[in-house]
Length: 319
Image (cartoon, rainbow, N blue to C red):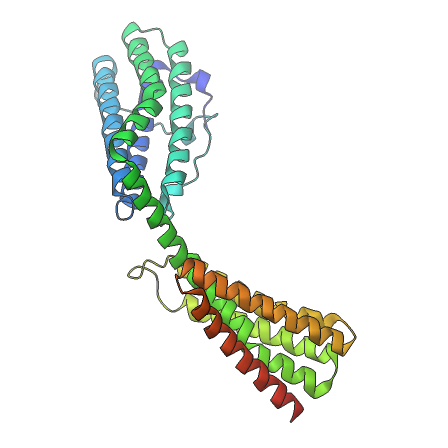
């Protein structure tokens, strides 16, 4: 059962403060480790903040020993009512500097509030003084972080971090999503239009297109998810990549399948062809914008492949 903060003794308040400083210091260390490869400047900033938390913990332990002896009871944040649960964002890999800074702001605010309330709950002068000093230190922590940030994170470093974030985004989301969109948009053209021209029935065409889209999405999701674990390529979690690829593959095929919900075959086919043109244009733009493929080349590659598959579907359907 968690205790109320107002029921804690001075000894327990000090023990809790020690636990909080140790936990915060270890969290800063985890953040630093998670950012070290792609954001080394921010990692150095977090290591300095970790060292500051270690100094706070040392001061608290020295005071505790002088007042209560060597044994420090294990009292954690979850043992006391009123503390906000912290999501374990430090376990997420990879993690970005913006998420880290938001988490730190929340940590500092809660710890500062704890010290302010703890001062009101203690009567010993030495304990009150140390807790008050730590409250001020936490209040200044944001300013200290900003000064460290200005020291380490220059405009050049910020540019590198931004480029690193973009590279991670491309590897983990754009590439698998683009692969899925291309596969879904192009590979489903042949079965969809073959069924459409073979049956001249929009419902049959829709069913075939839907089956091809969902089947391709499931296949691509498993293929991407099982391709590698991301540890060497930096492509992130295979589950996320697999979901992204599967969803985009299905979406790519569903786009030109939905027009066959229209009962009129000629109108449905005309709308489907327009949707295909839009899909190919979007794929070309993504390749140009994120993959740095020249727009003309990207359009030529995508459109040529799409047209060939489209023609194949029509020829097979009319045969």
